[in-house]
Image 1 (tube, rainbow, N blue to C red):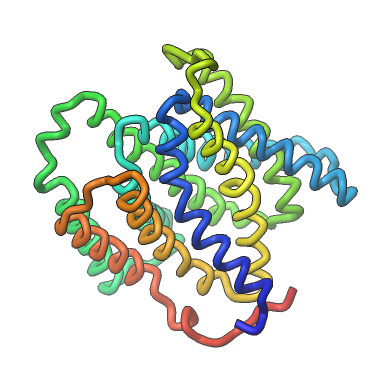
Image 2: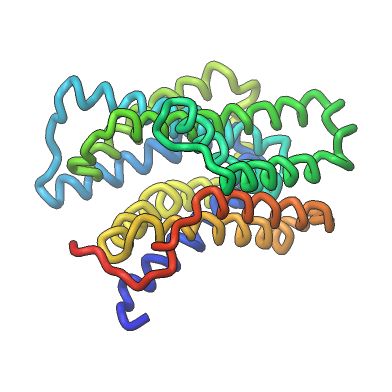
Length: 302
């Protein structure tokens, strides 16, 4: 706690990423989902561009690296972030955050399938706990799936977490060096923003800009400035001070914050079974990813 910059960075990541699902839900109240996702990423690209210009780091990254960034952008921004945003037009932010918390299961199972990780009894327990949590989510609400809009929203969510898992596994499989992360992220944001804005004009039934409320626009701007840029810088600053395993603990905090804020601000109903499901999923993911290094005092040299 003596390192105030590190403390601020960790709090920024935990709180900001914990508010993104809530912010998306508010943004899509009056703004079509693909516009929210596209404008968010495009504004983030503009911010990143000026940061790179200020640092004198903006440059062409080469066709091969551009290809890698396009794949990352497609999987993790266009599919994962985009489909999550579309899903939140019909699915509550609390349920979205909880289902999204299951992505480490797919990452683990995919890594096992590709030989990047070994399966263990500990992992089996974690996977079973996560699936038990998913069963609790839909135990009482299975009849809600008869609503085609809600059912499609759930379907989009599972596409989203599959996209995020695929992007993560792709990174593991290629074992690429990060290089200039800010520069790479600019190209990812720019590509995703352009593609998603095109999708917005193609697939949005009604994009009357006059109907966009100040509340929704503010939420969209918050997602661009804080959700896509500030939290990213804070996350990578934290990685220079503590280990990636320790920073990964924030993922569990994000889900708890998201569910609490959805109940507090949007008055979303949180049942006892939903809380039990959240506990099972978070514990299951924690068991799968548990590493003794999580709680050791260690620092990473910048």
